[in-house]
Amino acid sequence: MNIQEILNLFNKGKTTAKSHMKNLIEMAAVDGNFDQIEYDLLKTIAKKNSISESQLKDIRNNPHGIQFELPKDKKEKFHQFYDLVHMMSVDNSIHPEEMKLCDLYAVKFGYPRERSKELIETIQSNIKYGQGHDETYKRVELFIS
Image (cartoon, one colour):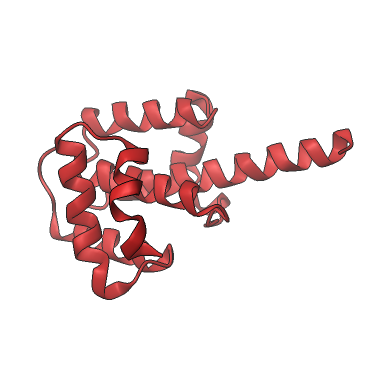
């Protein structure tokens, strides 16, 4: 693999991460109330995705410049959906618009519409009991495939 191919992979990962940040911002803001606890979670997830706080502000100020991009890897896709459910749930108050948006993301991410409520509830339960992405993925892997 030459240097250009490596750079293209890195940039591809960056665009997926920026798309993810945009989705999380949309989830946090859909109820009309972007709390500090939501912003703190956003910063934590951004850091894990190598997105700086200044890049995060750019995404928040110019969301139309970022295209939705679905990760190809099914584990990464699940990690992003888990983060969206976490963002919806982090303030312990789920607004109906957040739930609608979460259902929409479940479908966009390719999960069965008829299982989205169960998927979301399972993720919420696992978050509540301190289980991360990987433990939760193992629990839901069979019904999301």
